[in-house]
Image 1 (cartoon, rainbow, N blue to C red):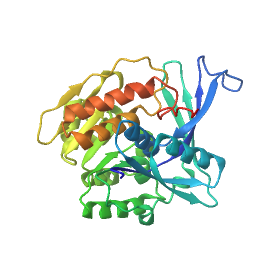
Image 2 (cartoon, rainbow, N blue to C red):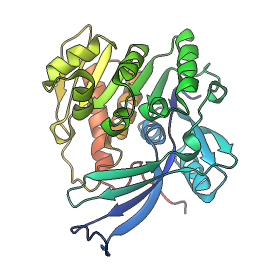
Image 3 (cartoon, rainbow, N blue to C red):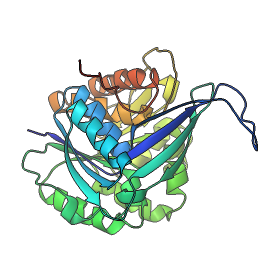
Image 4 (cartoon, helix red, strand yellow):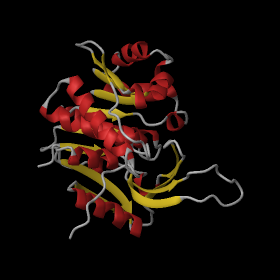
Length: 297
């Protein structure tokens, strides 16, 4: 039944909402909660709740964090193939959220490291694949993920790719990162990442440079919305959906999930971008990077 497959990182997010200045070396009052996270896990969750049957490969440790992450997929209706990695802990991200809603992340990859071709499930029921950049940026997974991509290409399934953060990309040779882009059907990234990869601060110039590598590119601009373009069309700008921002964790992932779910039914770029913006508005208005699970009664 699955039509979307998400590959990459699955994490447990430990989120600290801070309403005051951080008192380094002392105590700072905060509101702390735990949630499922990881870019691939977040995209899968939003894609599913936005109406697309979605599947994820989830590598977790044999620990309580892994149990929590997997149970959240089940509650959201995401189909999953859990790979319990003995001797490894489930990936964890500590997220600090400041009073403006901006987040700073401290990730430990854990069991996500080591993705390989054997982790790729049967592709017979898959129409599109989302690939998190963290999987390629991780040297322990890179060769295995490249083997996955080669097999996916033979099946002629489009790959939507988010190269992830500048902080992560800065640890890898930029020419190597650029060599991955032509393997993808669509690219999602924010302004900072687009500038990092192209050298252009002007978004139209960055779009045109990235379109030399991939057929469709979308650059997310936070509260300013997004701009996208395909090789066969004109650039399209959309506005962000007004909302009360509480926590920006997962904003880009939710945009990708909403976009991909819409893309399955309508390949119109503007419609897909608008669907992404709607999902992102829902995401930033709650704490955590995934849709909230409604408790059973």
